[in-house]
Image (tube, rainbow, N blue to C red; front, side, top):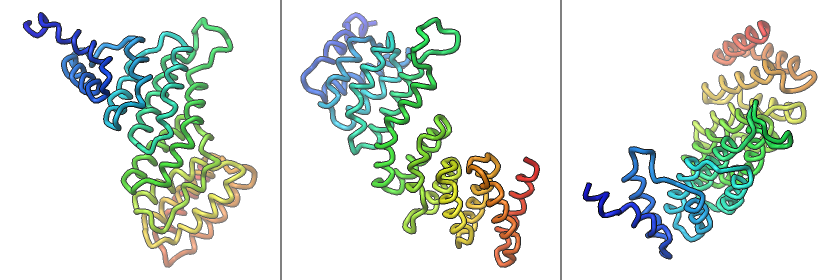
Length: 281
């Protein structure tokens, strides 16, 4: 009660306009803590745009604090949503992976909020939620690929999981970057496994021969699990018929040849299982 009487909340909101960005960051954290029961600090257009216009002044931690607010703010219309995206666009060019991922999350939340849904009475030319999400993924593809190639093994693994979800959300957009997901000798085991699983999702008639050939090289890998995943990924391309004309037959022939690899029993076993699934398709 004494706290409310002292109007500390109003004081903290006024301090969001402090010229020192570290003061603003601390105010955001305190307001979120005070108002945790109601979902965090209250946001309106003026506060949101003020913080985003100043985002270049914040430290890395401060940038993340501001970006965490964006998914909770619902833009009033398409124009405001696009304005917020444009203000956040420079963050995608930073080397801070956390900020890039938080920006992607913010973009997707805006797309979900302002995109047209079935039954909306908006103009026919208004972009749908799916259209906006595809535009967002196209927009963030290059920064993500750059981070994948330059990050630590721990960061790379997290980003691969994130890319995997984006591929499921918007198939086809990462297909032309399939070589980025080729396994490299120095990659950690868990990263290799993630890359091989992703490769199967990137196959299309143009790149399937290259991807299948790459997977074929991994079948006899000393890592038993890697070999199994490579076979499963090849079978997945055939099952989804994503490799274009002749791809299914080509993969089926490879799987039949693997049945004769008696010196590698786990591969012949996995090939038999994959062939059985392919026949039942």
